[in-house]
Length: 244
Image 1 (cartoon, one colour):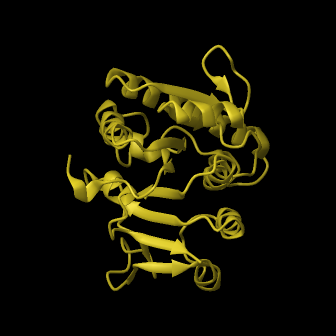
Image 2 (tube, rainbow, N blue to C red):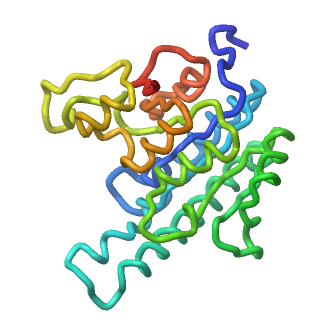
């Protein structure tokens, strides 16, 4: 193995958006994209890293899409529960992709649905990680009005992770949207206070506050470049590193 990719972190939580498993701007699940994520995850675990994954559901459904025009037939809280179910669907797809590569996995959900997944129990998840099983954490926190960013921060602290990796389509945090503003500047390092002061789009502010309280570092990086998950865990200078 490449010694430059030797892991710096022992236990890691990877936050994936639903779009990372999808067809770009289209809705649905892409087998090719899901396998791409699974292959990178397998390489990480083969190096001895304990890996937990929080997956979103935006490629299938966003809870906010029903409430954009105000209270309608589908209540906002119901829409959020629907979004949580979408994350479970993505979790099932990712689990099968990982197991097709001979990775041991456990899919857990914040809301009980034992026919398809284990209920989230902190101590049980830690034991799975210690046995080198990839733990997929679906269903958010089980509560409406809470983003999967906050779920990722919460689970990272509960499971004693060394770092929270946020996988995105861009290579870090910028001063403005780089897809709109070509003059946007990418930050290599930030502290939590800068994120709050400049209202930077790292994660939602509840998640940032939770990480700050727990002194949990965050790395925002582009996972689309093959091998970047390994590089991130090796501590190589990619993306934007957020810490104290």
